[in-house]
Image (cartoon, rainbow, N blue to C red; front, side):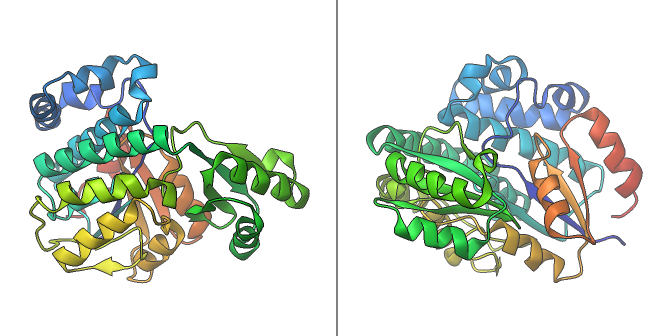
Length: 312
């Protein structure tokens, strides 16, 4: 029996039309979209299926849309008998992974992500910040550049070897970019179209307010092994997971370490569950002996069922 890891995408993987074909083809997926619409009191499903793109890109909408699309896709895979041995999610995607692991009910994940997105957007408006991708630089080298900059800036995403994301105050980010361009060239540094400095100390106001919501939610012990962003390690205790979700808002995403942790259990097959194929690409760049497929529509689902439909 093939062991599988399900990995769940984060903000940036959204696209108009996501989930539409799956919701039409599978009642179980449509039910998830309908549940989200009812819980939120608005047409999130229509926003996913039809846009407009500008509205879908707003943090308050994006995070809920990706969560819902990912969980709808997860439910189809479960219905087809394709289940994971381990799960993980990138930033926002961690909430989808927690649903997959049985730690969170979907309704509670919606509540948490709704609050998280709103608070992060508010923090982004009051604490002006941004993020930038830095390609082709060693971790220690970029950490040193961040340390020399004036102001708040830190590595926010350790995505894969040579792909890092920094987050912080606009002036500090620009300082690091200027220094990095000397080392690796102008084309390997780019600002990201985000509304705030996510996974940085500038999100502290959001983190403190989020705690009051997080403390009202019931978390269950994981039924499937889950690797958490903050540590890049497996977590088995519900209260520890609660603490790590609190920390995640201001701490870096240890994605490269997460993939190695999963691989060290013997798993070499990854399925990216939800819109886009960003994480599939990171698997290929990080683990040379592993395979990654994504499932986001009926066409990609057919590839998954052909390869894994009998794996249990």
